[in-house]
Image (cartoon, rainbow, N blue to C red; front, side, top):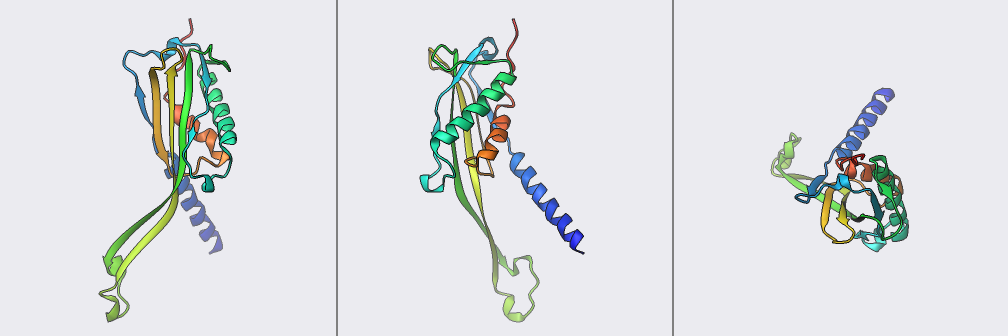
Length: 182
């Protein structure tokens, strides 16, 4: 009996994790912009919109982790990181995590059989608390400051948790094109 409880709990946890990670990012590419022709990029400090009293780490820690994750993903696609303004592309981000509460009134009986006559007119409702995270990564041309590529999405997790930033950045940049070799 205990094994069955653990199996069900593990399955529920797995489904929750898959649901959170399965959410997608929307990609916007500038018309006539071919990012594959660029070779170099730099990462600038982005904006963290999580309320200060809810952050698990400082803006500087988030920046260092975001920067490392972005560099890792773009270098894997054939681009080269440079730490200064000689880069052809500049990468910035906006991220934030917020507490959300979802409630719903299920109405009389709330899909639950009444055990007494007094329960027939009783409303049933439910609520759940969760964290929702916004992540937007924008890549611009360094000299002209024009948008080249942007991705944005929301996840049902907390990206101010340092352990989750790598996976979230990977998911956000998954559709960024590999660099064409000359």
